[in-house]
Image (cartoon, rainbow, N blue to C red; front, side, top):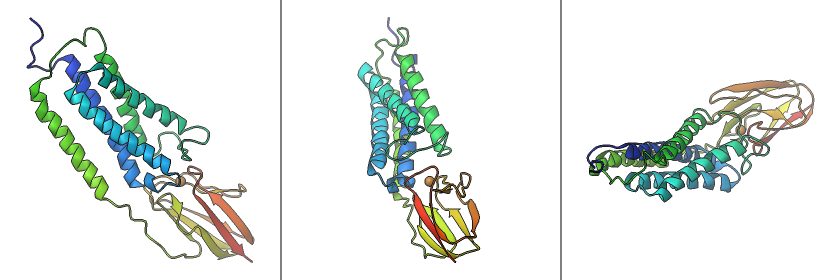
Length: 254
Ligand SMILES: [Cu+2]
């Protein structure tokens, strides 16, 4: 007789593993969106993260209840697309104005990378002739599956409730804070010989790069600062070396 339906067979395990991996990858994208990417200047970037998250969660759900090749192919498609976008965002002008480097933002980039690769591997495994085959769905999967999506729903709602709350700060000369992908004091006025300190209050790494190359910081993680002294009068434009859309100016008066 055929495989009994009461035990987890390899086909089911591979589908469930892929569902969990896709769910993780999707939640990472949604988390990044709510945690700051929605503030990026090009709204298409945020939209693409939401689309990725929603598609991943939906396909993960479909993988739990359906074993169709089409659903599994859709899962591979989303994961491959995510990896492609990941690669594109790390070269040239990036994607929708966002240029990331290496495994930034950390640890989200690494988690998503592992999740997408795992999803592809698990789904590819499900297409092996020995693994595939017509197994019916184990009804007892309903409980763990419901658990996974309950956890996913809770995580989502917590993320949704969290407002990263762009705080309006006063323009204090010599001090620039970074949050929501922006230099809050986008223009500061200091007298010659003054220090200017940038502090990263964002959940993402940023850096300070003078347009004329006169100064630059390392990549600044959350809470890290960079200080440089402006000895000569003039107007000094700078950008974030990671996100070119973040710009600011230091005006030094004599
Ligand atoms: Cu930046």
